[in-house]
Image (cartoon, rainbow over all chains, first blue to last red):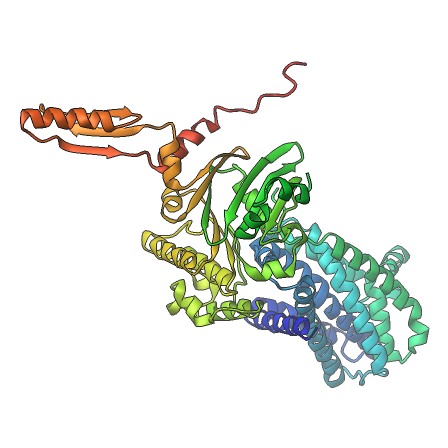
Length: 249
Length: 312
């Protein structure tokens, strides 16, 4: 058991080193959401209601980009390069390997959400989160859900050249309709209904409650349930379809 | 027939299996309608270098990937170090090293870092620096994989397969893309593995490589084994005949293909002795593995599978 933990930990540390050695990946993970935050912060400057929307919105975007987008892209790359197949031939267990990979993604999520909270506090007049426990619950739920959906989505992506397109065709529309940049109540009804069926808007609702409104966790259970349903689907397809080799077609 | 019945009929069966690193019995693999492997059987003894030789699409890699646990077989029995690789037991993966035909690596990992990381996955690894030296990557220890040439990457593949100190090593075309010097160096490494008592299953399309390294060779074509034996046996047993050549009195190069060169050589040397001169440039050449291989695989294109619906 300690050996299994040791292997997971070693894999995690390797993934961290590889992450920092790839400057463009590090840039997209950390700089892009902060750039969005800075731009929209400038646009909404002085309007606290809008700033109160944008800060948890960017936090939700960060959860999605560090898990869903990063895993869909990275796994496609590692699969196509044959790194997954090579690892498959070693004694490293699937659990330890994926544990390391997920740990790496979650670390990025934590760093990113912390940066957003800090920026909100320092630059945009948003106070410290009202309910830290609720914050943790929704970050964890968002990570589990969007990470498993990212792994599942990587099975759909045919090759690495197509990975950015396949990832962004999901990521960009979802962040636009889920109220990252504006209050979702102002959107037309059909878009609102569509967003309500997807998980990100519920992650953002939960983060907003924890960070801004202070609405309690028990008032946000419906959000958790919908995230949970998507997570179950994501985990099912992530595990069921997991492939260590790229399809040769 | 179950294993018990088998051991009753063949009392040596259990002995054979404990001395065999790999036993393949009537292995079949089908992809849809395509039969990639059509019921092959062979065994690899512990401590030998066994070569699988054949043209592209012969079923070599499919066979090896079943033995490595990457693919499931359609039918037949396979035992690798006493395990069924289809179950992917950890104990088996701890005792085998794999060099795949083409496979990538993390792009930003350094050579030493990669070998050290891999070493930690195995219960009794070899020394990391020693392994790097053994494959000749000393000077590239701190280089990332992006900075390595194709041949150097291939040597890293070998280092990663060897660092766990495996008993059994799968080498799928291990020297493809090597310059001649690197190739010789890798051959030395593979010979050193045999000297250490390791078992090696080697697939290659280089005939000289099989001839140099393999204790025994199976020639595979169209998913079937055409011949198995030592390189020398395959040469001797083949239909290809022994070639005798010499320069005659007019200075012309003569050549004859015979089953047994004894009589011809006797005739030539007898005549020369009687006339009081030498038989110039007399050579007697046994067919090489290459001749046998070319003969056995020559009709690859000629043999098209007979359509089964022909009589309908």
